[in-house]
Image (cartoon, rainbow, N blue to C red; front, side, top):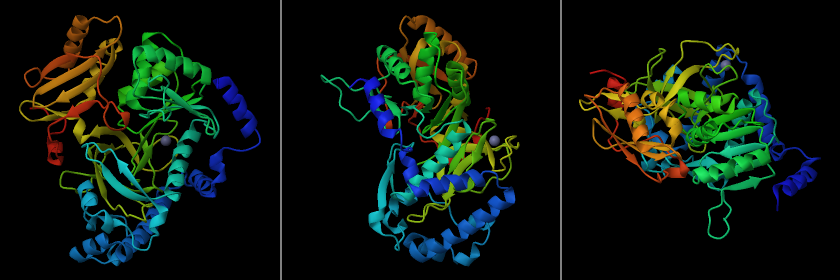
Amino acid sequence: MPLRVQKGFRRIKFAFSKHSLWDHPEFVRYLQWLEQTQWWTKQQFEDYQTRQLVALIQHAYDNVPYYKRVFDQSRLKPGDIKSLPDLQKLPILTKDDVRKNLEDLVARNVDRSTLVYRTTSGSTGVPLGIYQDKETSYLRELAYVYRQRRWAGWKLGDPYLVLRGNAPPEEGSEGKPCLHSYNLQNNALFLSSYEMTEDNMFTYWKLIEEFKPKFVHGDSSSMEILSRFLKRNAIKNGTIRAIFLGSQTILPYQRKFIGEAFECPVYSRYGMTEKTTDAVDCEKHRGYHVGMEYGVFELLDQENNPIARTGTPGRVAGTGFDTFCMPLIRYATEDIAEFSPETCDCGRQSTLVTDFKGRLGELIFSKSGYIVPLSPVYASIHGGVMTRLREIKFIQEEPGKLMIRMILAPGSSQREVQEELLSDIYSKLDAREFNVTTDFVDEIPRGGRGKLGLLDQRLPVKLEHLETFGGNP
Ligand SMILES: [Zn+2]
């Protein structure tokens, strides 16, 4: 059925009803509450977090075998955790701990039929499974998402484009993969991140122009590919008012580049399937506001001690308040961030994080063993030579060696791209420490959930490597 007709039906069907999310009282109640709490003072946040933490700890001790054990082994009682700093008395929880103690982490006083088992792709490639409450946690998560969307003027029911690692669920015709699908109840157009070839991109843009989305929900690598296509072909964005990035590390240059290509604001969100941490940037784009209602956000150094000072990178750890069915307390990730020394001029007093600097797995090793984040290297090639590439991926198998696998954009010369690329890269990387090689291909396989991923780091990157983070020999 042509889109025009489908949209006509949608208009008739939904003319007198609100967006389906409004049918869920939990979503409505929670979103309204979040719209008030965003203006809380630091003291109000602290009081609220302390109350939530004390309740979560008591519940974990009473009902979760894993935590009963952890408390007993550490000779602690729930009453020992009375304030936010007391949380540090408990050990961190690693992904490996979750994998090994999955059943013992589920609360005994929870009806198992209300739970859903979810897996995350994880940066190491080993999937991690967790249990979550089927409905409430999902609806509350959406309330956080919509609080940020409303800062950009997004109203429920506004047409939007989704390009975030999904393969559209529908089967294509004549054995061809399907590039898109519609969810007209939510007024969304889904495009596949798996089929972004140059020919298909023209079809994609035609679909977008026909659908006229006001907003985009995308991942950074797919949106970057689409942005490069717009720039290369001098195509102007007509209807999209703001872009929301999530589900992947978002590098500062990507946000800037996507914003320039679409000539609209770009919002970012840092979150995870495990629901321990939420952080989003507001309409002032001065950093990420930590979701204080969501949980306790910590940064850890290499000894897993909390970092309180600003400007020092550490690993993100979170304690999610909405994880009662399977409490995740001080759940440590591989993601690196640092606290901002500024306060945001939007007036919100929640903790501000400057940026999420990528995962430990997005760091590269020099010949003599010091490490640098890949992002500035990638940013150095971004303005120029990148426009003549369609896709790019860095691969490291040995310290000091970096292979760059690329797909050329149509009409680009391999020799010219190679020369310019290497000259840009060596402006950031010491040639005595890094030997960079190139590999031009027709296709780069996608990783988990259709994510292209910037770096395939085959060397183990450990926490102690943070000591040499960004260091010089
Ligand atoms: Zn702000």
